[in-house]
Length: 58
Image 1 (tube, rainbow, N blue to C red):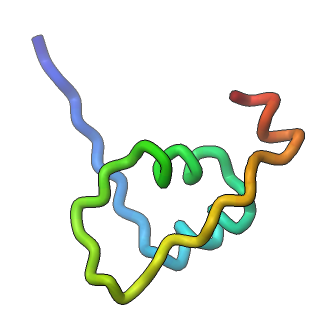
Image 2 (cartoon, helix red, strand yellow):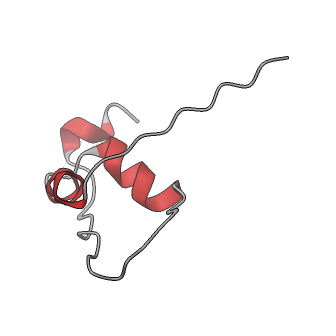
Image 3 (cartoon, rainbow, N blue to C red):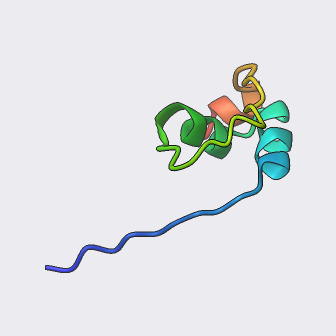
């Protein structure tokens, strides 16, 4: 059996812009992802909830 692991590396600015736009993918990462390193210099933006369009894709 083979297990495939994928790593996604995104800078904090791009992740925060996506969270501010309420993008579902990034909200899931913030909620369920594993933060491997935190320098304490930056914080994730708050997620305001899904828009009606994004809720349709859940």
